[in-house]
Image (spheres, rainbow over the protein chains, first blue to last red):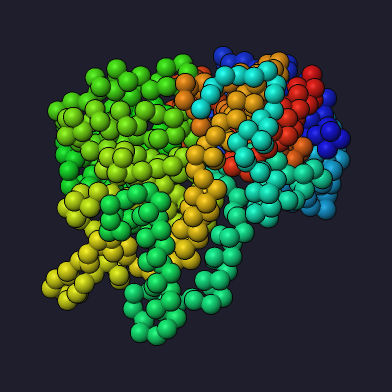
Length: 152
Length: 421
């Protein structure tokens, strides 16, 4: 049970039960789709970008608790951020989840605030893609990739 | 076989003379801990664990007899050829095929179906023709036919299933038409456990001179198969789901059909004589076995089939049925569990979802408690669509599973409910 609580921390369960920004964004000007063919997780991400800032973010889709909570917390954390900061957050989260931490990014997720709860996912290799899917989708939306993102 | 449910009465080993604890000793991989808990292996429909006899057969082959087959004049090559060809004979007997020429070694059921698609399919199917499959097929028995239909301008017809997961036979009969060139249907659904009325399916198709391919991948480990009694035209299965090695499988085809089919792949072993002007193909079954085959795999597979035949396939089926009934009762008693697939005749597969917990999360939580299951779409995405779920958790049982393991499964599912509150 203790290992499971490392993965399914209360904050993750809360975002799974009540995902934030779980809606269609009518005035979105950047969208991207992500898909994990192994488990069928799907996400459609909506961003409203203005003056180099993410003014609003929302998502729709279906997936496991990890992917849903990750998408929920991601949207909450990028709203109000300049595009370059959001992009930099993507790289830091990716480094934390995949263990490719560099000297200035602690693998425990120091400086990532609430998002550090996903550090526990690293101990569950088959679930890392669940957590990274929304972030790859964000990366695609920011870089204007038209093709749907796939974890495979 | 009784399907009467008994309230939470674990099957007693005395009722079937099934000494599961003794049998478990034959499977070294079962005796380990994962995440600090005893392994409960319930992913047998994905692949089964291997008995020591199979592991020994592989080791012995490589340690003593290893050589190429059908070509050497030296002793080792003779021994390897003898072991490989006698494996074919053993498998022929296991399936009760009429001739060893009807047993073609392939990599797995998937390759067997692709072989039939590329040879029989390409020569027989043309624009406007139809191929009939069912709504509960594995992707391996969907995609090759789809590719063939796309290439030829033919149409794939799908026999629907009812809410229990049983084929709607009236619809099947209706779908068979003058343009139907082949029926390709599974004996046992990997995702739901449905056992199809395959003899009836074959009888009806043959009434209209339509040949039938049976996907037996999930049948061979669990029940006796008699291809002559079934009267199927093709029967395919994989070794690794039937306690044998990976990378080896079998295509059975009626000799007259195989004779008329062109070769699959070109290369060595499938020829009699090669000149740059013309090649004369080898006789059956070698016409379909280009290149050095998986010799050790064939020997291992024959050993696996001998092993299950030795235990008795009817005894295996009876034991697994008791486990299925007991496991179904235990899971149905967990609040929030919904079974997906409740066919009238089922093999030992329990596919289910837990309200409020995604199958992937449930799979992780079970794994942490030592319970290995499959969580996902089971390579049968149309089945998931039919039942309106993105994924299920599937506990698939084998001859070595125990009532106690099913209790561990049920208790692990209850833990998942607690974690998710």
